[in-house]
Length: 191
Image (cartoon, rainbow, N blue to C red; front, side, top):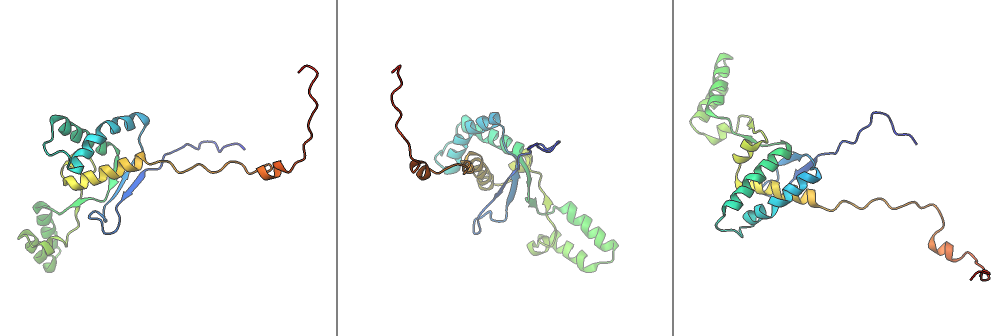
């Protein structure tokens, strides 16, 4: 059977989510797969980074700090998308207030005023600003979140592949083979 011309293998990205009830249950991350070379590099930092995450290291050495820095670089190189955002800053709220005022929307302007005064409920009225999944974006997140993403990604990459489909079912089964009569052949003259 001939394969269709122009078809190419495109590895599907990993989708990382966290279980309901987990502190990060709303977080979704999409990350690309690794080459063998990248996997070997990842494995070299994974153990040290995991020591930091587990709390088994109470006084990180320069080696641990380098491993953490490499971990962030590695993650930034594989994360292609995530749903992380940050609250709007004062500039964004002031711009929204100016738009509301220009449109004559006094209710929206009042929400902006409350948000500028630090009212958390008013700030929640605004859409968050997407955080880029790059090194700067990762460095701006808390340690627990970054380590959870890293750990989930490493576990996903290192997990055993599902078993391949079973072989062909053509031909007789071992039981059927055993039931086939056989006859013993006389020894050959040369033996």
